[in-house]
Amino acid sequence: MKKFWVIFSVVLANVFWGITFVIFKYANESFDPIAIIFSRLLISIPFLFTFAALTGRLQRIRKADLKWFLLMAVFEPFIYFIGESFGLSMVSSTMAAIIISTIPLFVPVAAFFILKERLSVTNIIGLFISFAGVIMVVMASEGRLAGNIKGILLMFMAVFGAVGYTIIAQRLLDTYNGILITAWQSTLGFLFITPLFLTLELPHLQLADVKPSALWALLYLGVFGSGICFILFTTGIRALGSSKANVFANIVPVVAAIVSFFVLKEAMPAMKIIGIVVVLGGLFLSQKSSMSQRKTPKKWRKWMTMPRV
Image (cartoon, rainbow, N blue to C red; front, side):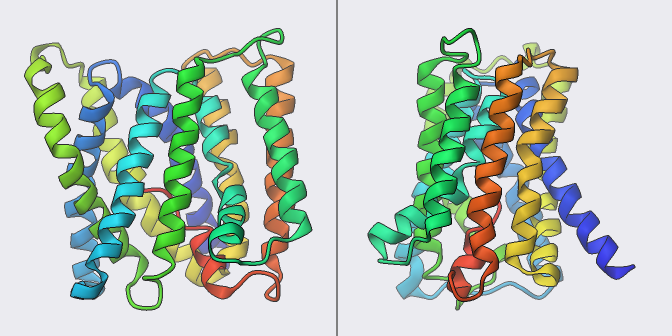
């Protein structure tokens, strides 16, 4: 029974994350991307620090590690959220979720070139298969781009940010717990995004025109997308192990596609459906190699599965 609730919490976390790609569209009706990032972090930071304090996970950052926290926050949430939020404002929720789901494929590639980590054959095959699926989703509209090219590139910018974050975060893994790292990187990222919000968006923000649905969307993104989901998922990692928990992350693009179809009335042509299946197949093949203790170092098995903030 205990294992059932653990699996349920991991599935629930990934379902909530999948829904965030749809919820963003409601927030974007009243707020521009930078305002959404600012509000999301403003809501999630107190939530994460309160949870860390109540569970005895508060830690002081050592002075020597501050530079790594700062660099990590530049990659994520700053670069990641800039790419994701602006990209999501230009492409469909399904396409955005599919592109973001390729992050676990690019992390081993980056580790191979930067840290000289071993890159398995299944990682390489999975990368090519999933990338072919992404192309099918992107070109699902009668052989033409099914989304704004700038939006697609911005989503891959978010992927780049997440990969950079993962490479840097592994340096901090042995010293700090995951929830504290997320809380501090969110705080530092908030400091980076605040000047942009104050100068570019706050002067043009018309609160009288804000829809109630947009406010609820911001609350969902902050509390669930950057708070509760992280707690549920990390609970699953501790109980199931990172490799098994990571398999459930494949739920995210599927949930995003289903909810987008019914709620946002997004078109779902056959090519798009096949592309989603191909992407998931490549992801599963690539992640299958991480099930082996011999192939993937312990620290990478954890950080390759850490959720987005």
